[in-house]
Image 1 (cartoon, helix red, strand yellow):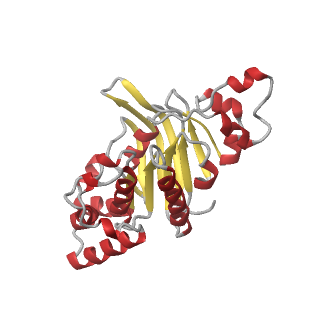
Image 2 (cartoon, rainbow, N blue to C red):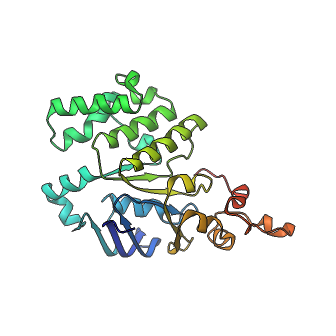
Image 3 (cartoon, one colour):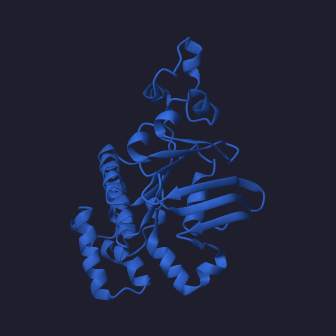
Length: 274
């Protein structure tokens, strides 16, 4: 891909409480319009990297540039830099309850743009458009705590899309969702990519990988990126998937191999939900 790099991390190290490593020397470049899946077992560092990309955490060592500018704690304290950065990147958390806190759905979706100082009437029109786009207009005056998991997920996504960011970060987007909401979300992600959005998503689910990503960065349980490649190549590499604990190895004990075709790996998945 020849498009320009929009997010560039180099040599990132991050530990929680200075002693629990979450990222070890991680480097990754995401280009405009690309869909990158961060793939790995639970606890390998995918969510931590997303939080750094969203400017919620800052690395112990290494650098992060977004849209050509260094993202540091100091820079984000600068109001103009912060506003520019926050309007261009949006993060949908794995757990909607961590994200949705306003008294009504309408207020929830308006919160971000109002915080960035957008005009009230502009925000109101944007909220209406976003409610309609995600087919949740009927929920506008409901309290988020009254909603189902799938509805909450739509509201969390709406609160990000209302900003019309260039880059969307998703942490385990389809985890713990009912099948209908999962299908809706997969179609939405495909649609968002078609409109030119850059998408970075963390996942350990292999069966939707080829629909949702152009490229994968594979994390080991040692918090390093150990492979990058197209979804089909990654899915076809059973040794790699075993190595990073994304599939079981019972398939190897039955004398048949799962190298034959990428999709055969799918039957050996560990469907845990963290």
